[in-house]
Image: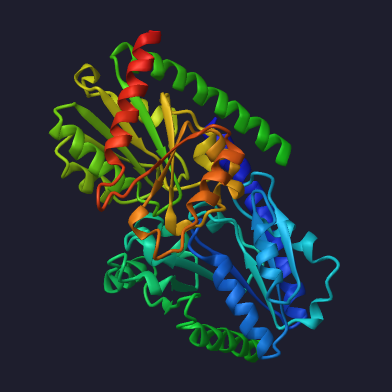
Length: 224
Length: 224
């Protein structure tokens, strides 16, 4: 029984991979850098994205965002305040986004208008790791309130990501967060991984994050 | 493709439900109350369980625990310090526990020795909601650092739980946590749900939690 499920899941994953591959080509043709944000529920993806979008808007760098949730459009409402195009994807109870959902929700946007496309995945440290969304960069967020051992306990999602962002640094002291241990655990799972430290509340580290995105973008432009 | 997967998943769920039903009968025959703890990664399940087990031990109430993770045995190591029998279940990358895993890991324990059996599920606010583990009480934990809207965004897991525990209350002020909003959102999804507030750090609310378990146990004993 289990074997059959795994085989069929592999089939779906391959179908997802194909859709993701075509989507990536389409996004590259428009000159977009696409960022898939993954994390546990409550790690602060929406606050992080809200601040990112506001800063990009102030810098007159056009960006758009898709945001996935099992239910509600709370996140889209919060992000719309940043003054950029945002769409909510409701997964109807599914625990991850898939490439087809991204493709469907981009249908009526002119992608040539944007420099960056952000995708906020469903809050889940397990299942989204298996689904390529056609992104260029997968960013895993870890908040200081979650504990330093999460990379060891959820290795797949940290291993499949390109950049780690430690969020809610303003709460680090109150949580007795051990930054060295967290960084060591991230790099035990993904050696050499770039790690940023931010606070969406104070804005600390957000300039470094935007600089990091700009570097990713120009590195990719140089390759294409 | 999708339809086939859903059908097969339904098959697995039914198989899981059957195993869970048999397991529940077996646990009841031993006079155990079984508690399944579910939450997002980093909500403080292990710290909560650690304090619970220590308090039960001091009160000479025998308990045991099974703890599920994708990888590592960190949680079991932490729980063993409470001085009660603990076993780690590694799900090998799977995003939830299943009834068969519980049954297998209980095989060499004499269940007649215990009053309570705690199961700490994989940290995931989505997938564990669909898997009955033979428990009597499903408890969903929500930490103040995660935001008040999680019940609306992950309705299935709150709806399928019997008791909600708001954890890390010691951080409520630093996180500007809105307790009223959180309680309103929990009860929007699950009207009348019992909600406890705890801090595993200070111990606040832990006596209420043990009292709540004792009530659940005597209510069930009265029915049987």
